[in-house]
Length: 629
Image (cartoon, rainbow, N blue to C red):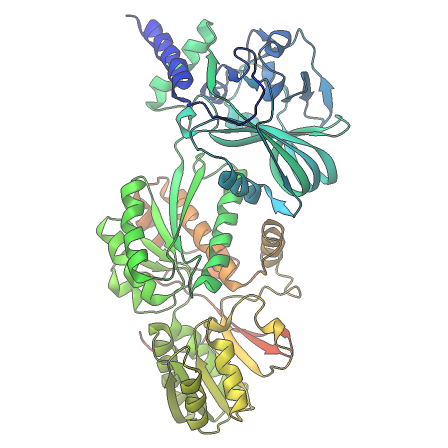
């Protein structure tokens, strides 16, 4: 069998498998459809389009005979195709939607005869990413193709259209580098497209793919991002896929030539990063915003073309705030996702200690976005990195500020006895405060959740110029209130465990509370990097308050993607080496550089004040000296 014949046979087999592998989706009370009208019909493949094969011989008139709903493009990559209600529209690089000429031709398109199986409404603000998560939870199986029509009001929408190309054609990634981008505000229209299963990789774009057309059918394009406001969603499941394979020599030679040159599939393999965050349990207050920050970073990277021309796939697992679960997930990720380049996440020292040794055993680095113990790297030498400062640094910054700026000469210390983080934090603070000449009058510990014990510990503390409270997110506020009830009315200083989004803004009766943390993200911070992050996060998660832990998750994901880019590879060992050599990285939480031989970056510390329901920046500092780990 010749190479060309073998290739054609392989493509034909792919089409056969696609048709055979889709199990029918039974829909109650659905009207019977004519033969072949439940089929997803596609001409050519995404791989051919990626290779720059932009000319097909299928006419628009013939395409209409195979479906009244769908998307695609036109010969010479001249704009985006929207097929709706049997009409074909061409959104060119001027942003205008034109009725396509029936004699026009397409190199790639996918259509179906649309008849909704299910309908649902969304009447809340929701980003495209959140909308897709919502749909994932609603759709009954991951193994069937779905056609989706989303009609209604969009608060914002960003679309694109490629510019018409000339021979010799560039690859798709090069062609899209000069695409036209359009932004809509408060627009009515229809976003239509497909969610395709993973076994269609290479034949088409797996996951979600949407095009948009305004209600008056005058504008549109390929959807890059959106914020839905009030929409109706119609869903149509297909029970078969037909792949129409072009018979041209150009098609076969284009695919064969690039496959042989690259030695791999034309559809780029995703860069897999995995994160463990506690989306439930007592660490959720820190980890939910961190996970959302990480998701935002990956979404932005993918909109910009991915990393090393590869899409980034982020796998997020819920550690449930339990050590045993976290350890099991670390092993599970590597077993189920063997191509994972690196693992990151977690904001608690004890939970990081459950994950990092496991990942190290499998040759993967672990980057903690928020666990601040400077002792952590020693637990997995060479494999456990921090994207945040160490507790010795934030405690020293707090001690120097209290002694020099607040003129506090005496302190009493209260700390959570069940957390490694709080135990270390109070110890570092005490060491540095006494080095400066300050006096520690008393030290008390408490068990979180024991209200009577906390009250008794607060009563036993001696009155001092300052109370240093080393607390976790769940107990910071209750213990502050207990201290006030016990008559400690002066300033209270804590660590980044106090930094919970929206917590102090709800406490109009609480004042003189200070804490060290990773960044100040208030509306009065006009740093362009902070402003851009604050706006992007608020748009992506309108129901979530932006905080430093959201920024830490965002920076951690970006730091790993930067390391992959610097390594020029997703090989876990290459990424590990590249991360440790980073000397210039600008994050939302500040400039980062890893000193030679260190797995903890040099970073500044923000000191914030919570007073009468407002939070403000007091100072941004780098301590003169930090106690050794």
